[in-house]
Image (cartoon, rainbow, N blue to C red; front, side, top):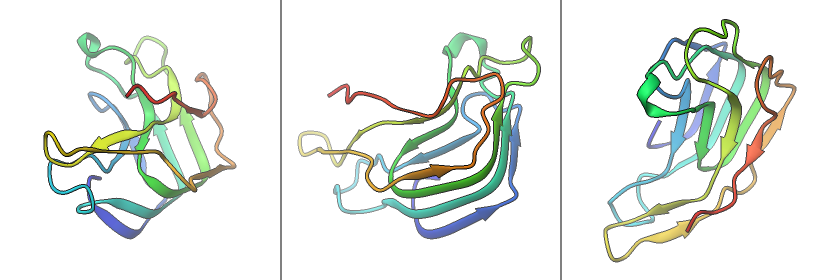
Length: 131
């Protein structure tokens, strides 16, 4: 999801994808105030065995480059160790948004993760800002 506000996803299954199971990203080349992802709720989702593209490195089941995201219940898992490279559950990180030369730095704010099991994966994490 690269744009949307007030979105609720319930009982979603995501497995066998090339990279992430779920990607919420506010990155855009448009002005930094446009096309944002915010006020998103994910309820009881099941994300497992993603990152099947072996040349791409390890990817989390859920990647968040957005604010005001709520994840309640469900599981992020690696069920078949021989399948895919998903080794992390949920990652949040800051992002640059806006046209080249006029990008603004954003940090994930007011994200809430509760009641999510992480079978065979790392705990949810917030990455240090690489910029």
